[in-house]
Length: 223
Image 1: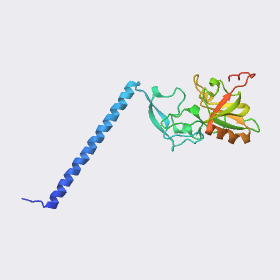
Image 2: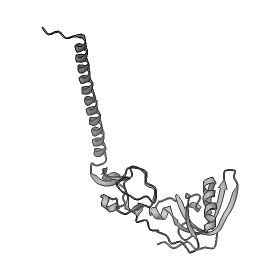
Image 3: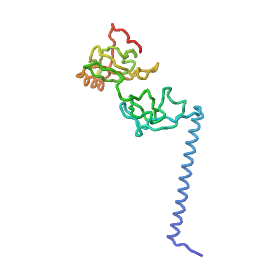
Image 4: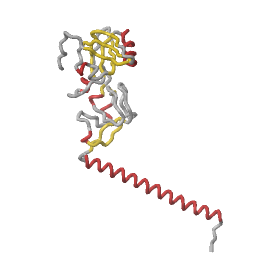
């Protein structure tokens, strides 16, 4: 009868243990994959089951960033969960385009939020366009829109309020870009003198910008 030495027995036991471990890993992987498939199927069943291949951001994409294989890829998406706007389906549709708004990782690429990088706005000669954060409350209940002239104030953390400029032209608002009937203002773009840009940006970092509509001006006409 063949007798195994001590070292050979150890090797045999080790090999057997390794085989058991490998089998356990495969079993665990299969279980996880099965659970993921089950959850995915449940989501598909819940939301109707129809899917589409669309382009999705694989990372946060800042405004002005070119779109390509480094930050977007084609993924399956439940159609019921897609935005109602036109969504890019192929990478070729995004060739040469840049993000015109910040796009979060995992968001489908909506064509209204990308462009060729050219400016959508016309800046008056001698002025510069600068955007600052805002909201409906700070922008006169959302009444501020393209073509408005506003007085701009900053409120600091100490509760102090200072006037930054009067009759400043509003070039654009986020609500106009989003084009939704209930879109809220998240930012506004103002036309200011070159020497006022740094002051406005510094004020927006240190405090809260308030926009005030002076009396005596007609509401801008809707496009």
